[in-house]
Length: 256
Image (cartoon, rainbow, N blue to C red; front, side, top):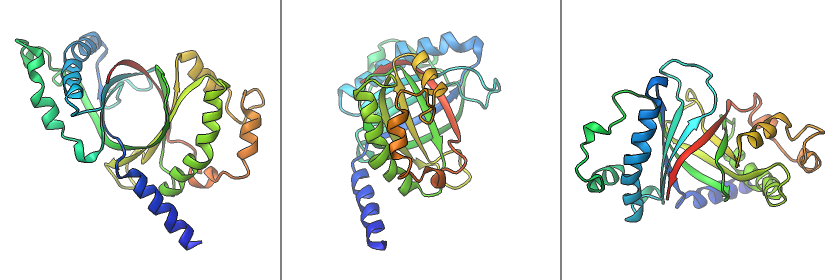
Protein backbone atom coordinates (compact mmCIF):
# COMPACT_ATOMS: atom_id res chain seq x y z
CA UNK A 1 0.00 0.00 0.00
CA UNK A 2 2.84 2.36 0.89
CA UNK A 3 4.51 1.64 -2.47
CA UNK A 4 1.26 2.39 -4.30
CA UNK A 5 0.88 5.71 -2.49
CA UNK A 6 4.47 6.61 -3.34
CA UNK A 7 3.90 5.80 -7.01
CA UNK A 8 0.79 7.99 -7.08
CA UNK A 9 2.67 10.89 -5.48
CA UNK A 10 5.53 10.55 -7.98
CA UNK A 11 3.04 10.45 -10.87
CA UNK A 12 1.31 13.59 -9.60
CA UNK A 13 4.60 15.42 -9.14
CA UNK A 14 5.93 14.38 -12.54
CA UNK A 15 2.72 15.47 -14.22
CA UNK A 16 2.97 18.90 -12.62
CA UNK A 17 6.55 19.72 -13.57
CA UNK A 18 5.51 21.41 -16.81
CA UNK A 19 2.00 22.39 -15.74
CA UNK A 20 0.46 25.68 -16.74
CA UNK A 21 0.78 28.34 -14.05
CA UNK A 22 -1.80 31.06 -13.50
CA UNK A 23 -1.69 34.20 -11.42
CA UNK A 24 -5.16 35.05 -10.15
CA UNK A 25 -5.74 38.58 -8.92
CA UNK A 26 -9.05 39.09 -7.13
CA UNK A 27 -10.33 42.68 -7.19
CA UNK A 28 -13.15 44.58 -5.53
CA UNK A 29 -14.47 47.23 -7.92
CA UNK A 30 -16.96 49.78 -6.51
CA UNK A 31 -20.25 49.86 -8.42
CA UNK A 32 -19.73 53.45 -9.54
CA UNK A 33 -16.32 52.55 -11.02
CA UNK A 34 -17.39 49.37 -12.79
CA UNK A 35 -17.63 50.69 -16.35
CA UNK A 36 -14.33 52.59 -16.08
CA UNK A 37 -12.54 49.53 -14.76
CA UNK A 38 -13.87 47.22 -17.47
CA UNK A 39 -13.14 49.71 -20.25
CA UNK A 40 -9.55 50.27 -19.15
CA UNK A 41 -8.80 46.58 -18.65
CA UNK A 42 -10.36 45.42 -21.92
CA UNK A 43 -9.34 48.36 -24.12
CA UNK A 44 -5.79 48.92 -22.92
CA UNK A 45 -4.37 46.27 -20.59
CA UNK A 46 -5.62 43.45 -22.79
CA UNK A 47 -3.48 44.94 -25.57
CA UNK A 48 -0.38 44.69 -23.41
CA UNK A 49 -1.28 41.10 -22.56
CA UNK A 50 -1.87 40.26 -26.23
CA UNK A 51 1.57 41.62 -27.13
CA UNK A 52 3.15 39.43 -24.44
CA UNK A 53 1.20 36.41 -25.71
CA UNK A 54 2.35 37.07 -29.27
CA UNK A 55 5.95 37.02 -28.02
CA UNK A 56 5.43 33.76 -26.13
CA UNK A 57 5.82 35.43 -22.75
CA UNK A 58 2.33 34.46 -21.63
CA UNK A 59 -0.32 31.91 -22.65
CA UNK A 60 -3.51 33.87 -22.01
CA UNK A 61 -5.11 36.77 -20.15
CA UNK A 62 -8.74 36.93 -19.08
CA UNK A 63 -11.11 39.05 -17.02
CA UNK A 64 -13.99 37.50 -15.08
CA UNK A 65 -16.94 39.15 -13.32
CA UNK A 66 -18.55 37.52 -10.30
CA UNK A 67 -22.24 36.74 -10.76
CA UNK A 68 -24.35 38.23 -7.97
CA UNK A 69 -23.36 40.09 -4.81
CA UNK A 70 -22.80 38.28 -1.53
CA UNK A 71 -21.12 41.18 0.26
CA UNK A 72 -20.60 44.75 -0.88
CA UNK A 73 -17.62 45.74 1.28
CA UNK A 74 -14.23 46.47 -0.26
CA UNK A 75 -12.74 43.17 0.96
CA UNK A 76 -15.13 41.10 -1.15
CA UNK A 77 -13.88 40.54 -4.71
CA UNK A 78 -16.24 40.89 -7.64
CA UNK A 79 -13.67 40.51 -10.44
CA UNK A 80 -10.79 38.13 -11.14
CA UNK A 81 -7.93 38.79 -13.57
CA UNK A 82 -6.21 35.60 -14.73
CA UNK A 83 -2.71 35.62 -16.24
CA UNK A 84 -1.66 32.17 -17.48
CA UNK A 85 1.89 31.09 -18.31
CA UNK A 86 3.22 27.98 -20.07
CA UNK A 87 5.00 26.81 -16.91
CA UNK A 88 6.72 28.21 -13.84
CA UNK A 89 10.10 28.40 -15.59
CA UNK A 90 8.69 30.75 -18.25
CA UNK A 91 6.72 32.94 -15.87
CA UNK A 92 8.16 36.46 -15.71
CA UNK A 93 5.39 39.00 -14.90
CA UNK A 94 7.79 41.94 -14.72
CA UNK A 95 8.95 41.23 -18.26
CA UNK A 96 5.36 40.96 -19.49
CA UNK A 97 4.27 44.30 -18.08
CA UNK A 98 7.43 46.25 -18.94
CA UNK A 99 8.43 44.88 -22.36
CA UNK A 100 5.03 45.39 -23.95
CA UNK A 101 3.93 48.85 -22.91
CA UNK A 102 4.92 50.18 -26.34
CA UNK A 103 1.67 48.86 -27.83
CA UNK A 104 -0.17 51.63 -25.95
CA UNK A 105 1.51 54.31 -28.04
CA UNK A 106 1.12 57.79 -26.56
CA UNK A 107 -1.40 56.68 -23.91
CA UNK A 108 -0.18 57.61 -20.43
CA UNK A 109 -0.25 54.93 -17.74
CA UNK A 110 -1.81 57.33 -15.25
CA UNK A 111 -4.76 57.75 -17.61
CA UNK A 112 -5.52 54.02 -17.81
CA UNK A 113 -4.47 52.63 -14.42
CA UNK A 114 -7.09 50.74 -12.38
CA UNK A 115 -5.32 50.36 -9.04
CA UNK A 116 -6.24 53.70 -7.48
CA UNK A 117 -10.00 53.11 -7.50
CA UNK A 118 -10.12 49.32 -6.93
CA UNK A 119 -8.90 47.02 -4.16
CA UNK A 120 -6.81 43.89 -4.65
CA UNK A 121 -8.45 41.68 -2.03
CA UNK A 122 -6.09 38.72 -2.42
CA UNK A 123 -4.10 36.92 -5.11
CA UNK A 124 -3.04 33.35 -5.83
CA UNK A 125 -0.52 31.39 -7.86
CA UNK A 126 -2.05 28.12 -9.03
CA UNK A 127 -1.09 25.28 -11.33
CA UNK A 128 -3.34 23.33 -13.65
CA UNK A 129 -3.63 19.67 -12.67
CA UNK A 130 -5.97 18.47 -15.41
CA UNK A 131 -8.74 19.63 -17.72
CA UNK A 132 -11.25 18.72 -20.38
CA UNK A 133 -10.89 21.54 -22.94
CA UNK A 134 -13.94 23.33 -24.26
CA UNK A 135 -15.52 26.72 -24.88
CA UNK A 136 -17.37 28.33 -21.99
CA UNK A 137 -18.52 31.76 -20.85
CA UNK A 138 -19.65 31.02 -17.30
CA UNK A 139 -17.40 29.24 -14.82
CA UNK A 140 -18.74 27.56 -11.71
CA UNK A 141 -15.66 27.53 -9.46
CA UNK A 142 -15.74 25.02 -6.60
CA UNK A 143 -13.23 26.03 -3.91
CA UNK A 144 -12.05 23.29 -1.55
CA UNK A 145 -9.65 22.51 1.30
CA UNK A 146 -9.39 18.71 1.20
CA UNK A 147 -7.89 16.76 4.09
CA UNK A 148 -5.53 15.09 1.58
CA UNK A 149 -4.72 17.24 -1.44
CA UNK A 150 -2.87 14.49 -3.34
CA UNK A 151 -5.76 12.05 -2.93
CA UNK A 152 -8.27 14.73 -3.94
CA UNK A 153 -6.40 15.48 -7.18
CA UNK A 154 -5.91 11.79 -7.95
CA UNK A 155 -9.59 10.98 -7.49
CA UNK A 156 -10.61 13.91 -9.65
CA UNK A 157 -8.31 12.67 -12.38
CA UNK A 158 -9.18 8.97 -12.22
CA UNK A 159 -12.86 9.01 -11.22
CA UNK A 160 -14.51 12.39 -11.76
CA UNK A 161 -12.77 13.42 -14.97
CA UNK A 162 -14.14 10.46 -16.96
CA UNK A 163 -17.56 11.11 -15.45
CA UNK A 164 -17.51 14.77 -16.53
CA UNK A 165 -15.95 13.88 -19.88
CA UNK A 166 -18.87 11.58 -20.65
CA UNK A 167 -21.31 14.31 -19.66
CA UNK A 168 -19.56 16.89 -21.86
CA UNK A 169 -19.29 14.56 -24.86
CA UNK A 170 -22.93 13.54 -24.60
CA UNK A 171 -24.19 17.03 -23.66
CA UNK A 172 -25.98 15.51 -20.67
CA UNK A 173 -25.96 18.55 -18.38
CA UNK A 174 -24.81 21.35 -20.73
CA UNK A 175 -21.33 21.38 -19.20
CA UNK A 176 -18.75 22.29 -21.86
CA UNK A 177 -15.50 22.42 -19.85
CA UNK A 178 -13.99 20.94 -16.71
CA UNK A 179 -10.69 21.59 -14.95
CA UNK A 180 -8.86 21.29 -11.65
CA UNK A 181 -6.07 23.52 -10.28
CA UNK A 182 -4.09 23.42 -7.06
CA UNK A 183 -2.76 26.38 -5.10
CA UNK A 184 0.98 26.97 -5.04
CA UNK A 185 0.91 30.17 -2.98
CA UNK A 186 -0.28 31.35 -0.49
CA UNK A 187 -0.14 28.14 1.50
CA UNK A 188 -1.05 26.94 4.99
CA UNK A 189 -4.04 25.46 6.77
CA UNK A 190 -5.48 28.91 7.55
CA UNK A 191 -5.82 29.92 3.93
CA UNK A 192 -9.13 30.14 2.06
CA UNK A 193 -8.67 27.16 -0.26
CA UNK A 194 -5.95 24.84 -1.55
CA UNK A 195 -7.58 23.56 -4.74
CA UNK A 196 -10.53 24.29 -6.98
CA UNK A 197 -12.41 22.67 -9.82
CA UNK A 198 -14.08 24.56 -12.65
CA UNK A 199 -17.30 23.52 -14.38
CA UNK A 200 -17.75 25.53 -17.58
CA UNK A 201 -21.05 26.44 -19.26
CA UNK A 202 -22.10 28.59 -22.20
CA UNK A 203 -24.96 30.32 -20.36
CA UNK A 204 -25.84 31.37 -16.83
CA UNK A 205 -29.05 29.34 -17.07
CA UNK A 206 -27.02 26.19 -17.73
CA UNK A 207 -24.79 26.85 -14.71
CA UNK A 208 -27.76 27.54 -12.44
CA UNK A 209 -29.59 24.49 -13.73
CA UNK A 210 -26.52 22.37 -12.96
CA UNK A 211 -26.52 23.67 -9.38
CA UNK A 212 -30.29 23.28 -9.10
CA UNK A 213 -30.24 19.61 -10.07
CA UNK A 214 -27.26 18.05 -8.32
CA UNK A 215 -25.79 14.78 -9.54
CA UNK A 216 -27.51 12.95 -6.70
CA UNK A 217 -30.95 14.20 -7.69
CA UNK A 218 -33.28 11.82 -9.49
CA UNK A 219 -34.03 14.73 -11.82
CA UNK A 220 -30.41 15.09 -12.88
CA UNK A 221 -29.70 13.87 -16.43
CA UNK A 222 -26.54 12.11 -15.25
CA UNK A 223 -27.91 10.68 -11.99
CA UNK A 224 -27.48 7.09 -13.20
CA UNK A 225 -23.81 7.63 -14.08
CA UNK A 226 -23.26 9.33 -10.73
CA UNK A 227 -24.77 6.41 -8.85
CA UNK A 228 -22.34 4.07 -10.61
CA UNK A 229 -19.32 5.76 -9.03
CA UNK A 230 -20.61 6.55 -5.54
CA UNK A 231 -19.19 3.27 -4.21
CA UNK A 232 -15.67 4.31 -5.25
CA UNK A 233 -15.54 7.95 -4.23
CA UNK A 234 -13.88 9.11 -1.03
CA UNK A 235 -15.04 12.71 -1.32
CA UNK A 236 -17.00 12.48 1.92
CA UNK A 237 -13.66 11.85 3.67
CA UNK A 238 -11.58 14.26 1.59
CA UNK A 239 -14.00 17.21 1.88
CA UNK A 240 -16.28 16.24 4.78
CA UNK A 241 -17.90 19.68 4.89
CA UNK A 242 -18.19 20.00 1.13
CA UNK A 243 -16.79 22.84 -0.97
CA UNK A 244 -15.77 26.02 0.86
CA UNK A 245 -17.54 28.12 -1.77
CA UNK A 246 -19.18 27.60 -5.16
CA UNK A 247 -19.14 30.85 -7.14
CA UNK A 248 -20.15 31.57 -10.72
CA UNK A 249 -18.01 33.96 -12.78
CA UNK A 250 -18.87 35.41 -16.17
CA UNK A 251 -16.07 35.87 -18.69
CA UNK A 252 -15.81 39.51 -19.71
CA UNK A 253 -12.88 39.05 -22.11
CA UNK A 254 -10.10 36.64 -22.98
CA UNK A 255 -7.02 37.03 -25.19
CA UNK A 256 -4.76 34.13 -26.10
